[in-house]
Amino acid sequence: MRAALLMDPALVPFVFGPHEQARLNELLEIDLTQPTTSVAGIPDPAGVELLITGWGAGIRPGDLGALPATRAVVHWGGGNGSLDGDAAARGIPVSTAKAANAVPVAEYTVAMITLAAKDAFWLSREYSAEQRFIDREAAAPRAGLYGTTIGIVGASAIGTLVVDRLRASDVRVLLYDPYVSAADADALGAELVDDLRALAARSDLLSIHAPEMPATIGMISADVLAALPDGATVINTARGALIDQEALVEELRRGRLRAVLDVTEPDPLPPGHALFSLPNVFLTPHLAGSMGNELRRLGESALAEIERFVAGQPFLHPVTP
Image 1 (cartoon, one colour):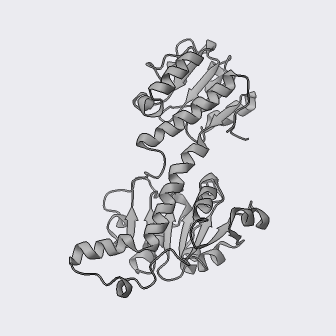
Image 2: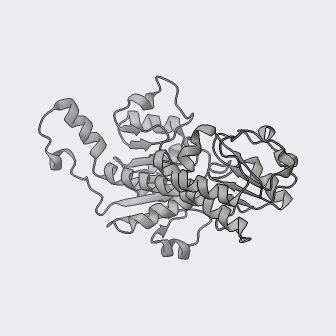
Image 3: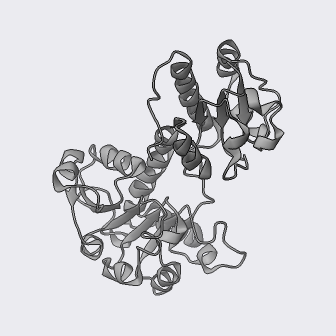
């Protein structure tokens, strides 16, 4: 079976290690040394039966028209933009590694929830600045994860994993997601709250996991931020556009809230932006998702799907229309 690899060439050894590359060569007729970043760069595209895609590829609407023999697409990232829609229209199944990529984001989120609850970021800065003994109970009388209430916005693959991982902690989890029933939330171990402001008013930490779409842009509005209790922490590993960032900056300048932000709007921020220097912000450069050795998980997930396709079995992780 002839296959083509559409991805950033620099990422090949990170995603597909020696074992995965050897197995791909056993299963497919594929040149792993010559990945391309566009459909136009595929040699003899008319004969390609399987398309393997990933980050760094420029895929445009209509590109599948140049691949008339293609019977499936395996994407080792999340969604694949216009290609997903084109494939669905042509009846071509597409596999996604969204579930695999959710794992490190959930790990990062739970770590940030734990450290933010312990006041670790803020006490670390105080300790470094003052270089003296810090009386923990005097400096942070409400610190600690025990007994806190965590608001989760979005029962996405990541949000669901975060809720599941919080089961081991002595916390209360609230969930806002208009597409989830109270019974489903209860099965996850969360209490469904159907009003976002009401959820914020009860949350010590608010963690955002909704997808970016017209209905969710700005959903963490000035009113939602204002409903959060004094000292609450906003954690965003989803997309920066989901928060009214100007309203968040104002709350942070007043010192009323704290924020742990892995994503911003724009992403990255321009030099000199207030979020770089506010003392109650812990900012990371969009690193919650798969990186470094975590990329191998995505490659292993893609390989498992390719093995299923070659064996005539349906994908375990299909993109649904």
